[in-house]
Length: 127
Image (cartoon, rainbow, N blue to C red; front, side, top):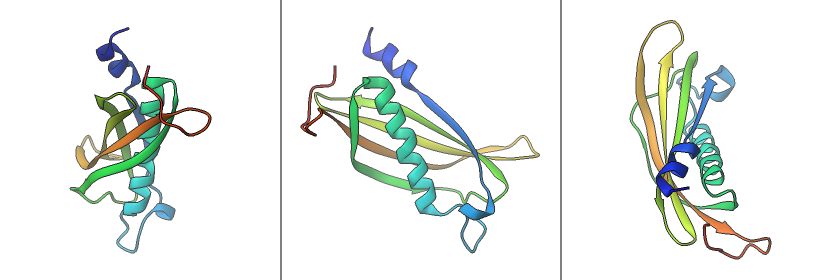
């Protein structure tokens, strides 16, 4: 299977409702919660691409473009953007949708780097 096909098949999409217990005093999603969700989607994407043990080694520039209010729906999309020998990068975007309107905006984006490891936590080649 080609790398392009693997990238397409590993694209990951997760939807979440934004409830008050995940928001700050401005009634918008905590930035840390957004980053947690992004890392989780990136991990799933990296694992689906490689089918190997993967660990996060860095996150690159997470841009918060729009606030994500309580009572909205978010979609997180993870896509592999780079594959190296032992590492790969996953771009994650968060889109926010109003529950009762047909609106959708990109709210957050960022990139995460993962390394494939063996059972001894030593980097290994991505197959």
